[in-house]
Image (cartoon, rainbow, N blue to C red; front, side):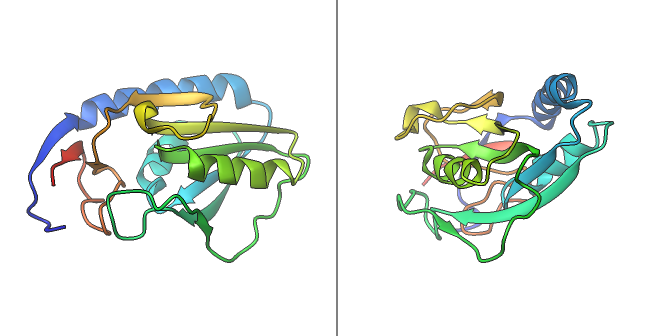
Amino acid sequence: MDSKAKRSVLFTRDEIAAAVSRLAAEIRHDYLDKNPVLIAVLKGSFVFLADLVRQLDFPLEIEFIRLSSYGGGMESSGTVKMAPGALSKIKGRHILVIEDIIDTGLTAAFLLDYLRRRKPASLKLCSLTDKADRRRVVVNIDYRGLAVPDKFIVGYGLDCDEKYRHLPDIYVLEQ
């Protein structure tokens, strides 16, 4: 998609910051004494993770995993791929998955199932955005930031074919 495609602001940086602050307060309440492992799904969640972690004033660890179901398009392929590399420190630990968006739910369900099999002490999901109208599988989002309509969004780490991640607001991208 052309980097000059039409886009309109869906959430301003102030609205995003307020959602991140609210999520951080909820997570602080639940994880203050648990030394959790935050597993961020790359690449889209990196901006959200950075802002969130700066508001969590307790010991935690961070891991990254790369999953993909979009490829270069604006529609999920329906097949989730995991980049090579093992996640360590799962068994017996409190795990909090950090996602930029839950759309069809396929990627999150895949990852949560993968992590559950590694026997964490607890496993929860935090997503900045939730596009519930597109859900194809049931996924429980423990910490939900912003509800998103059934539109393609970019900005604040979210991309379309590696473009738009740098934008400080979240936009609807028109075809």
